[in-house]
Each structure stands twice: as structure tokens, then as C-alpha cells.
Length: 181
Image 1 (spheres, rainbow, N blue to C red):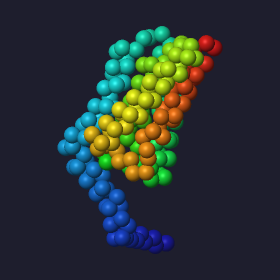
Image 2: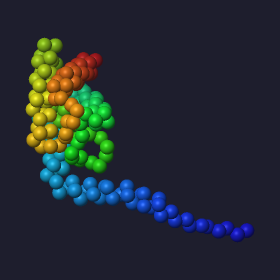
Image 3: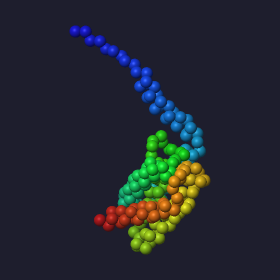
């Protein structure tokens, strides 16, 4: 019995795989030296460090759970906005096709986690309105017009106002639900 092994080299397949690797090299070369990438990295890490230092220890698990849910919702809404062409990102922390990590996974959840606690309904709406107003009219222009991290092509900032209010209310509701079991 004679067994022969054939080695078939497929140049097209090798070329295609090489083409997939090159963009990652381009990403590393162009992003690591960029001040935007370093700012993005700092905004991804520093808020969590500050939260760990300054957060009250009581009900920390509940706030973390609420923050994780808000990060997930924020990421889904962000991916939906990018997919529908409402905005696009000019900087990425990682070469993956999701939105800006500091905004979805750090800034929104950490700010909300700092703000939520056992408040009355009136205080929840006041804090939520303050959060949504500052995020919409200061956060969005900061990332869009000043830092040029994002380009809102078909999105008006004022449309984000009720979304951020709803995110805050959901986080506070989750926190209260988990705290008083």
C-alpha cells in the first residue's frame, strides 16, 4: 500500500489571509502613536480606577450589576447607530467593529454608578435629567466637535436626551431592585 501526501499551495488563500493581517498592522502603526488612541485608553481605564477609589463600599455589587447592564444596552444602541449610519468613529481603541469603548463601557456606566443611590422618584428624575442634559450637550460636542472621536452624520444631539434619561432610570431601578431584595 502506497500513500502519497500532496501539498497543495493555494496562493489566493494565502493572499487573502495576508490581506486580513495587514490592516491590523496598519491599525497598530497608526493608532499607538496617535494622541487620540492614548486619550481613548486613558478614558477607558482612569474612570474605573477613580470609581474603585472613591465609590462607597456599601451596595457596590448592585451598582456594578446596574453599570454592566447599562454598558450592554449602551453598546447595543451604539452598534445599532453605527450600523444604521447615524454616526461613525474616527478612533478605535481595539481593531474590532464595535463602538468607542470608553463611552460605552466606561464613561456612561461609571458616571451613572457614581450617581445612583436610594433616592426618591423626584430625585431620580432630577439626577437623570442632569445626567442626560450634560451627556447630550457637553459630552457629545466634546467627543464630536472638539476631540473628533466621532462624527454624527445623521444624528441630532437632542435625540439622545431621552435615551440617556431612560438609561439612568433603568440603572437606578435595577440598583433599587437588587438592593432591597
